[in-house]
Length: 438
Ligand code: GLY
Ligand code: MN
Ligand code: MN
Image 1 (cartoon, rainbow, N blue to C red):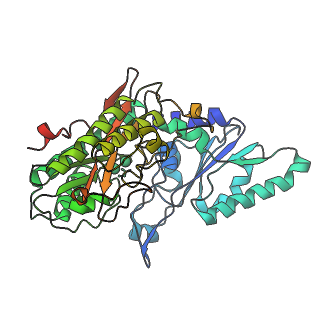
Image 2 (tube, protein in one colour):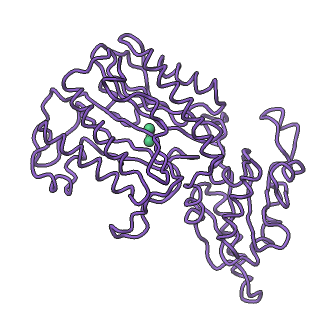
Image 3 (cartoon, helix red, strand yellow):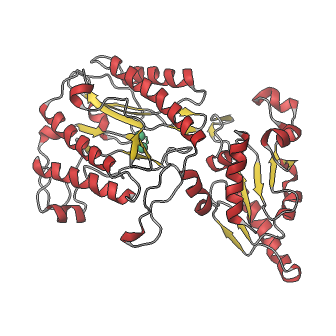
């Protein structure tokens, strides 16, 4: 893996040339008082270093003569390690992470300027860690002050995402292997959930079994808070209480995925708890399934996120028209977004080190500025329809017939763009009603 991290840094450095990029490890998040959440490294930081400790800074300075990759890390300190675990420390970090130079994090202010003096741009992402933002801005100001007589120094600060995230979005074969593993574990958990689901069981029991499978095979566990939403709860997009008892006649929407060595799966399936759709549930399900089928077909080189989204929206609107939840002329309904009360989210997102992964969908304001899919990208395809007891129709649209209320359906797959089209990585979890439910 060392060679892979080096390759990623080299690719970034090739693009920043005379610039210096600074990446900060993730901050520790407080759960309550002095108890912290489990540490999870910042994805940009991890992508470039593989180093997963807090209080660290990575500097990439391709123009520097000796030190192109510099790490600042916590030194070894047994009195602290006995509480919170072993640290790599300054000496071992050099060898283990391939840095040209490693300093204790306390020396950052003293050592950083030498990597900025000759840079033309500082690449740094503002907004993740305010205290550290101020540190970087102070360094930049000092460099600006010195510029008139020195004649060099960074004139601008730029977000590294514009260079780094397009690289992150194209998965290497090593990354793809980890994604496949995260997905295989998640598929197993979804299959287990299907076996377990029956009237009388609680949502949290299913969640626990799924997360047991996640944790059994990956120390990182769930990729995001698992959603196990029965009956009307399926209409809450980020439902996480998971405390309801499943009832005969419910649909069960499960949106859950495993994180394996920092790579995430993101899968949603919806099915009837008693293995038999009501007529209304089947109708809504079939609309969403068809929207997803057609949207997945749009995932191929040359097509864009917007092609995929518009395809899904059109099928959903056709379906809503057919069952009378929308009335009017289809183009107008789409243009005026009258479907929003029933479909309020996007049709997918990049997937990888982050569940909502870095990467761009559009660059420019025009319709022609949507970026085309490239082989190696992974995108989720996740249309849905949600008709809750609270849903209000859009203006000039009919009242909602109560027979549809309480139905929420989402179907989500993780799709790899390939040279010839796509591969649905999560295809092993059944979703075609006839095959899948029994
Ligand atoms: N589970 C998060 C999402 O689907 O985006
Ligand atoms: Mn998703
Ligand atoms: Mn999801």
